[in-house]
Length: 169
Image (cartoon, rainbow, N blue to C red; front, side, top):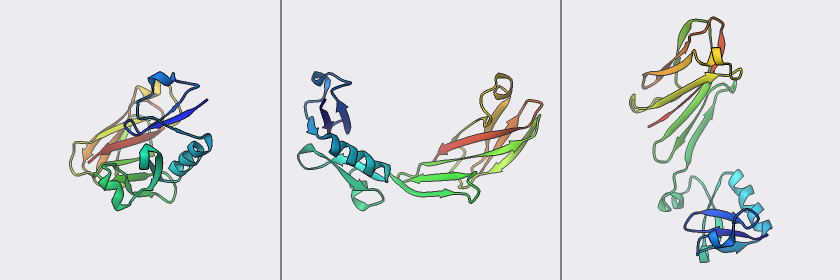
């Protein structure tokens, strides 16, 4: 088994999974220990980027160098004390946020978003937090109401916890 890194694809290749001839020409071989160290650093918030000679290295996010490398990165995160709502802001202005709320049967509620979008051109999706049920999930929806609010709709007869996710600028 050999592990390679390609700077052009910013990806790793393992010869137990892929034929070596399919790996980009700029491949650089790394050890299993180097690979494990890079992945651990990534799990701790670092970016994996091409370094000297095309060898992979890590770069701390939220630094000036990240922007020069043209990588978007998380600049702010938040989670409510109860863990129900959260958001992430990215360096390019992209916002991801989510949470969940109880909605009684055949009712809808308005949820104020943790962070306001720049306009109404954002996406919001919803599902039944309790798991997939054909009858229940078909009646659960979310729609944008304002740049800072969504409407969660429950069209089934019983109450459900609705998980929602919204993203946009």
